[in-house]
Length: 251
Image (cartoon, rainbow, N blue to C red; front, side):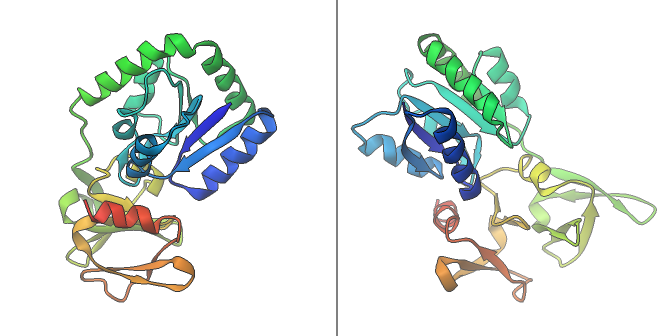
């Protein structure tokens, strides 16, 4: 079985490859892509189509549905995600297999068997799913209600510089230099923000595209991200995510 993995986190890609080798002796990882752009490039150039696609939902340059529009409808897709949101309901309605991260080996094996058995019937389901998702007006978070003094304050997403964790405290830093603490994890927050406007550079930082002033090459292929009003802040992007960050910034 030839498999394409669409996943923008190297650790998740590595784990998926390991699990696949354990449960599918004949598994051949045809390619791994980390963005919509890479996925589109793969299908525009390859002569060897995968038998199965494992696709993360939220990539650095948007939702993977964008790339899957160019995928032959005959290829079954198993979606992997850390976010149980609107898409999950759509998958259930359309009988599409999905797995929540962290991926369980037995669940993945069951899903692969189901994809193998239902490859023909999944064709129409995938087509309906992609059509329904792209026909929707997807709404992303526009504001946060955050604790402030004796009450709450409304924080507009457009005024946010970056969001990060500091000693297990999640903080929303404003373009003005002020910050608020909030009781949400970065995983929760990034799933609610527009991926064309906000990018998760690493485990600690989410950055608004409007505040990035420059990137500088760093040791071992990494890049340091500089942001307006916080020039002394050291934000490092890993070698694996640098190409995705550059692609996101260059759109």
